Length: 313
Image (cartoon, rainbow, N blue to C red):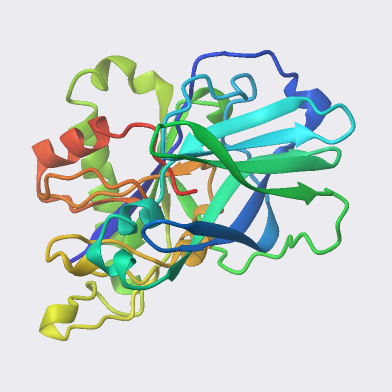
């Protein structure tokens, strides 16, 4: 079995005018953090800050108008206290909180938020919804862009290739396809799958009428072994982002908990939000990726069309 992970850039409607060039550099600041808790409680702690070479998001729509998702984060410039960026998102952690395991123990998930690299110090505020659907601030962290602990090294450098190039990523919807369970010898097969996915997608409405609004990229990132983990059958494969069936002990639920590796690979192309799903399974998964098996034309288009405002936080 060979899988790919799709990373989708969402573009929203202008809500507040923030001048990108006044506040940001044309690159990404990635904030990795730990999200720990149980069914009732959750806590945040910082992992690390990483500079990434591409900013794949809008340079105009910087404030999220819709506030979709279980969580959101807001970025404020310290000196003026002005809100300069925000996004809503959902995570695998929030889904895990609904499982029976979360009633018995605590667990930690690695999560990420990304935003344009700030020119001056900023405060990043994290919010979650309570049972009344109200926003409650959970955590905040100050980021100084001159902090020498912001890592610029690239741990997972791979070549990217164009499947479809319609122009500037800041004004397009960017889909980045990461191979999972494809070995080095299977990279040509992966590229064929990328082309087939694009053909499927742009033969269906509303995508075919808006083809010029999309970019599609692939990342040549091979796995050591072909396939994916199936714990119930004692099948364990050495794959790039450590995907596995039986997430939450659900047979057909394919996911990766390895957010950091996935993010490192994603940094090889313009990306912002990450999504996940499994071909043939009737669920939409708010988490780090949206995965596709290319056997089904209809399923792939329906899965992509169902993507909302969830992201990997």
